[in-house]
Structures are given as C-alpha cells and as structure tokens.
Amino acid sequence: MSVFTRKVRGFRLVDLVGVGLLVAVIVGVYLAKTIAGRERAEIATIERQIKAEKARIRLLQAEVAHLEQPGRIERLAVVYLKMETVGAHREATVDQIVDVARAGPPKKAQAPSAVAAMVNGAESIPGIPPPPPPEANPVRVAEAASAPAPASVPGARR
Image (tube, rainbow, N blue to C red; front, top):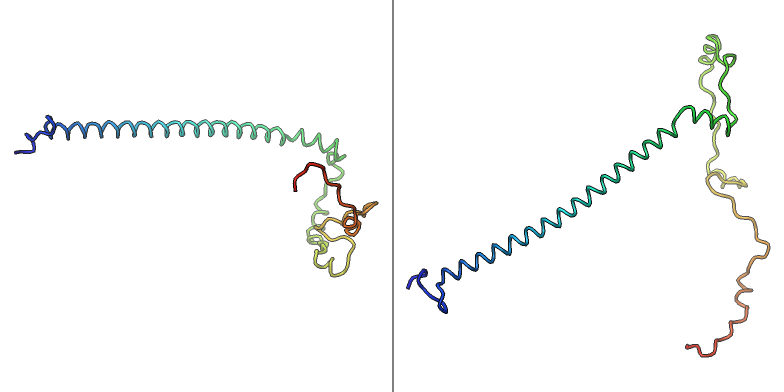
C-alpha cells in the first residue's frame, strides 16, 4: 500500500496530514496576530507618552522664555536686590582701563578648608552646619531606663 492510498479509520492518511497542517497554520496565524496586536498597543502607548513629554517640553521652554525676559529680571533686581542701572558717570575711561590692566587680576581671598578649620578648632566649619542648640529639658538615657514599665492591659496576650 502506498502512503496516498492508506486509510486510517476510514480517512486517507494524506487527508489527515493535510488537516493537521491546516490546523497548525491557523493556530500560527492566530498567535502571530495576537502578538502583533499587543505590540501595536504598546507602540500606541509609547507614542502617547512621547507626545505628552513633547508637550511638557514645549511648556517648560515657554516658562524658561518667560523667566529669562530681561525686563522681568531687571524689575526683580530693582525690587528685591535694590539694584539700579549703571549711570554714565560710573563708566570707566580709557585711562582707568589701562590702569586696571596694569594692576592685574585682583588677589583671591583664600577660603578656609573644612580640614584646616577642624585642626585649628574653629567655631564654625565650612560646609558643615552648626550643632543644634541644647534643649531645655534633655532626656537622659538613665532616666528613660528607670522609668516605670507600662501597666499590662487586662485580656492582652503575651
């Protein structure tokens, strides 16, 4: 008997193999579409997030543009820092500029380092906040240990 004419329970073997392959193809296509649909949903979600972030970036850029307006900065400097515009009488002349150039850069004041302040026993150490002031009624460990134990609650389990 040939493979093409052999029968299994009344069906030709070739027909059974064909039906099996058809079912396998159908399941494969279904799984591929399902996976593609999930990926499409993830892509849509990410695109929405990108769009929201771009809108937020545009909003922040507009806010920066508003905050950096020279008129606003000048107004704040006058109101809060008590600064004024530089008058013409405060500008340097050519002779004064030459004198400044000959004098060279100003001397830098040496900032004390934290290590030098600790070694020298300074009151305040740069970069380290001062200790808090002593409390009015400090709690001592010995007092807390000698405090009476709380009374047991009736009906409580141990």
